Image 1 (cartoon, rainbow, N blue to C red):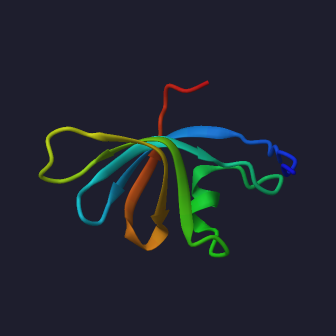
Image 2 (cartoon, rainbow, N blue to C red; image 1 turned 135 degrees about the horizontal axis):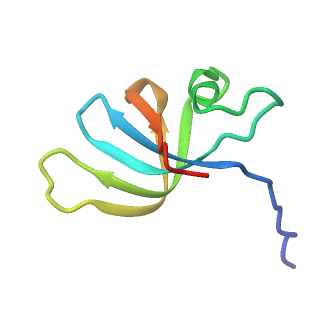
Length: 90
C-alpha cells in the first residue's frame, strides 16, 4: 500500500547565502508562511525553524574550485553570515 502524496503550496525565491566559513549557497527557498510574513527576512528571523531548506542548490565551498549541485540542502541559521534575494526574479 502506498501512502498518498502530499502536495504543499510553495512560493519560491532565488537566494544567495554566504556562510560564516566563507562558503556560498545559491538556490531557492520557500518563503510562503503566514500572511504578511512572506519575505526572506521573515524566513530567516523565524526562531521556530532553526534550519533553512534550500532546493535546486549550488554549493561553492572555500578551497574547492568546482561548485556542487544538490537537490536539497538544510542550512543551520546560526551559520549564515548573510543572505540576499536575487533581484532579477519575477
